[in-house]
Length: 510
Image (cartoon, rainbow, N blue to C red; front, side):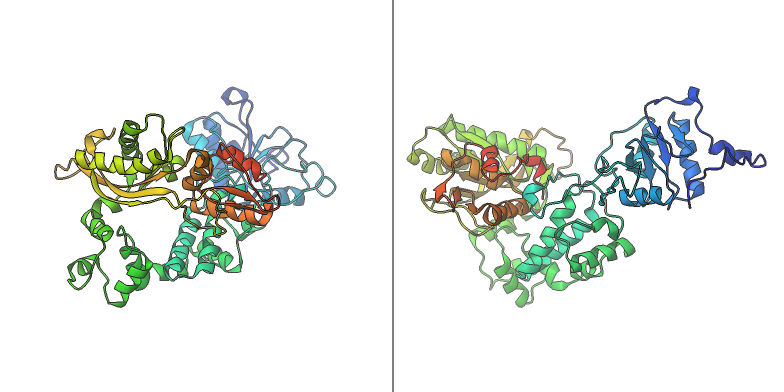
């Protein structure tokens, strides 16, 4: 239904309440003079529109009955930006200004706050079509809310932790994980890319029209999105969550040191619970798996930012005891701004140190922590790095730097947070920690690789190969055309070599 326009053309005195509700705000009631709102009735209805108009006016907002050049913000519900502009075209309404096109959630937040709130990506309605001046007189050719072309590569998208489409991305993450458990790589990549591109969108998908022009969304993916829009859930995801094999693999791989092969073996042997696995005397566990079972409850609980910072302080203390000039950088999800994680990763590099000093550092740190009672388990993997080796062509390739996978005994008094949640008087927590030692001249490549996210790094390497004829990994960047290694002192220089705009770590949550 079109917005009411006739209040001043054919007044209806017998219904003063409706007329009052739709009257424009009086000047003395307006607190925010520079903000003029028009609420679109389409898909909202007359009653709800009138209710929101009255609420907004009570809070001091100027809300117009009709659309005019003075309107700065058009608010709509269950409409995309394209829908709004189409409605304007059908009504033959010309707008010489360029109003913001916003979801009704923005106005509701404003009403709740009693003042205008900041407009973010989740509020903005998306315009996907080019409305030219010839076909849509009076409308801006490129509205301020129009979405630019979305790249198929995560390294060309800025993906923060503000996920507007979690109901969809959670579904595709589950489907991707199930494919990974079944070693179905193609389908796994399909779902991972779909989840990744949806995480980058600054708006919420509310109709299939919103998926137009978005890459990485094939027919199967779109069918799942459509089902979630219509039913609120995916039958395929529901089936996976109820699948005995998925449940078992999810449980088994939660144990430190247990991968897909071991999970497959235990599943085929008929195990479905960890208690049955642990009590079976015929099974032989690795040292890593025994540690995984021993500290299981701690390791499956999330690591908080405060705990990660406490570990960071202890790692730096230990490293600087032997190499005072070393750089110690927390990488992984915490570098990307996450507040929770499952482990804490650190990259260590030391300018001016000899090769022997670098190779001996991690073992010295392990010995120190053992003496202090801070080490519950460790596995030191020696370096196989070769300076002249070409980067790996595999997008998921592991690096060859020296590294240590360990379980750290974190004293809770070192954590700057409320410890009241710890039960039974426990004074420490087992934390999974990875330490990586890399040569100083390779620090930029190692830092970029260990920061993640996984999909961001996959796409960065894929982009280097397919678009730039280069090979990138955690060690180096090689130009196949010029047949030379490209040096870099920072992550910014690597992006520059690839011809990419620099993406901050907190925007790499793909």
